[in-house]
Amino acid sequence: MSIKENLELVRRKIAAAAAAAGRDPGGIKLVGVIKNVPLADVESALAAGLTDLGENRVQEAEERDRLLRAKYPAVSFHLIGHLQRNKVRQALDMFDIIQSLDSERLAAAISRRALQPVPVLIEVNTSGESSKFGIEPEQAETFVRYVSSLEKIKISGLMTIGPLAGEPRAAFRRLRELRDRIAALGLPGVEMRYLSMGMSGDFEAAVAEGADLLRIGRAIFSKGG
Image (cartoon, rainbow, N blue to C red; front, side):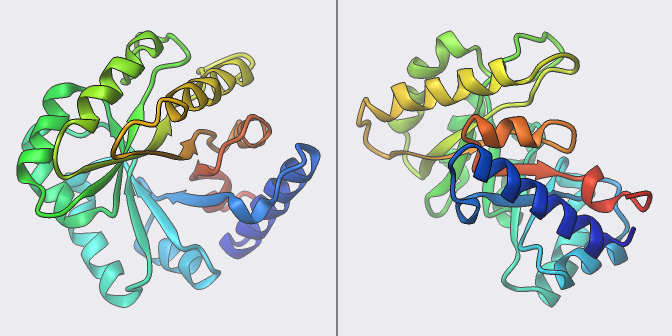
């Protein structure tokens, strides 16, 4: 299957999952994860209507993203991987949203270096797996209160990664419930607009639990369909 055909299939599956959950698929945004994807394949996806791209590492993305932005100025770039504090300045120059804020020190570094408000998502480890980044769910409210006190950061929602094995819906449900509790606090500078969860192997479960940002790579870019 071509990348265009893969993209169409993913969109049909998103629409079906949304319909089953009584949701409008128009409110769900697809972020194409382009780690290790050749530039020509990324351009094929953009030509087929993909509007958002997700990168895992700043150092691997810098040159390629500059080329893509010059050719496709409307594309939005998401940093979805762990951000090191020594890469904050480059990340702020490159990305439209940082999906992986996971520590007070990183938040402070972003606030110090940003020239304008930066949209971020708080990464939460809802699966409880030690191999994953993200704050613990029990610490989320305290962390959000701290970040909301900083200048130049705009909290736009939460992000999580599903478990490596097993049923993912409990982890996704926990993020949604956490989002709802934080939204009810009415904190300044906090807009629980996005739930970023779901990848190639579990995005339909994520849609069922309320995801509106899906980070999908293999299902789009695999030439095997």
